[in-house]
Length: 153
Image 1 (tube, helix red, strand yellow):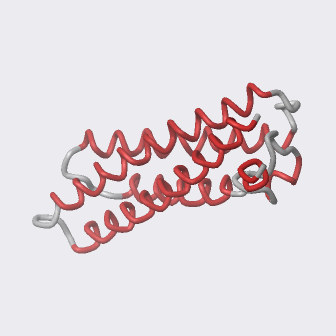
Image 2 (cartoon, one colour):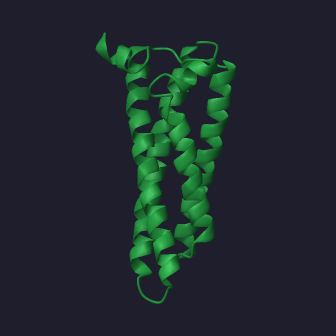
């Protein structure tokens, strides 16, 4: 069946195979870009603190959850059970939705700060928006292929 082959099979890999199978390879990129979003948001100024709080929550939550899942998958904690395939698909779907909302709000906050803020802060927020959208794309891609894997399991 083509979808199962495209997603690396219907079971989750363990050990270092996590780093070589798609979509689980995306864990590394989600980790890197999520960390960049976290760092940039933590050091930036946003005109509405509520926006910064939500974006910080999303970036920290997804960074920690992605790290924990990556470590658990590498340890083989899933034991090949189908519950973990469901968990993987559900987590990445929720993370994609969270990151989409955070990206849109961060872009709105950046647009609102065009006047009255320094050039450095404005460009720092633009970088945060770009990396947040890249992280959103990564989580959406991972979610789609995880849902394909879940359906074929």
